[in-house]
Image (cartoon, rainbow over all chains, first blue to last red; front, side, top):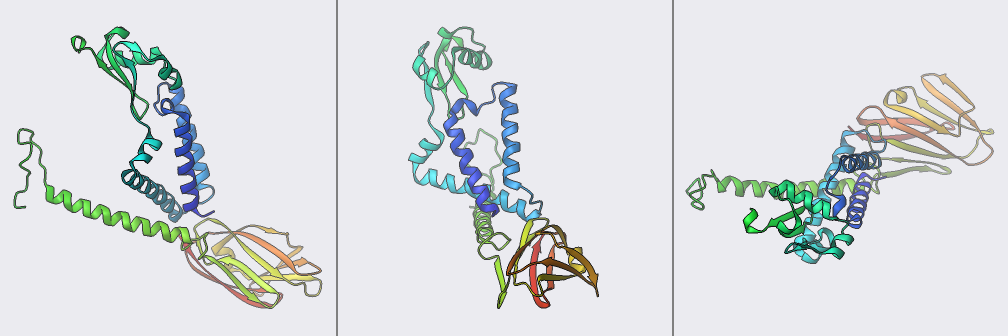
Length: 150
Length: 163
């Protein structure tokens, strides 16, 4: 099959799958998540390359993936609505010390994840020291502590 | 701009050569265009597996379908359609062919294989027009021109193999 078509198809499929899986799947929180991502990359390589060991084939595949990147970033800048659809938006999950339970449940984030992020970034100890917590586009959690705990 | 460094953010000691940055932006945009052209060429088949690459050599009931362009060690097919003559289809291929291509399989398998006068001769018993599919992989890049004979009729297959 034409390497350009293969590259474009895999790129779009991965884009859709990761969007469907939600933000938390992108951030490697445990070793297992990391290994899972590695396995996905192995399978992707197999599907893309197949039995084509030529230099030309590889350069075409890499070029295709880069062109897809260019294409999508051009689409996102011309039509900002696609940026929201494709990347999502940052979302508040803790408001002045109280966790927003429904949002956390839907994004598959639990209080432990938030407290872990709080410990790692500011050395905070408790939920009530957190002024705001935001689930960012890339799946990571950013913490804004109350001023006295900075 | 005569200055090499920017006057912005003077307290932050950054060596900002905007001329170089402007030029590298231009080079980047040029690079993007070249990349897109390369990919479009690949998509239409100029490097194999695509519309521009499919080629058919035809004469009366005989036809050979192959690709004008291929890539090093890329699996590809030669599809040979030929009528049966004297109860068989005979294909003869010059010996150098095996130097340039590795033959992965021939479907159906020939009943007999022999070497006559520097040609590899394959015979397939058949009773009517038959399709033979050769799975090959090019082992060397470059332009390869092969004249093979089907039931004695010569056909020239010319293929450019990219590295």
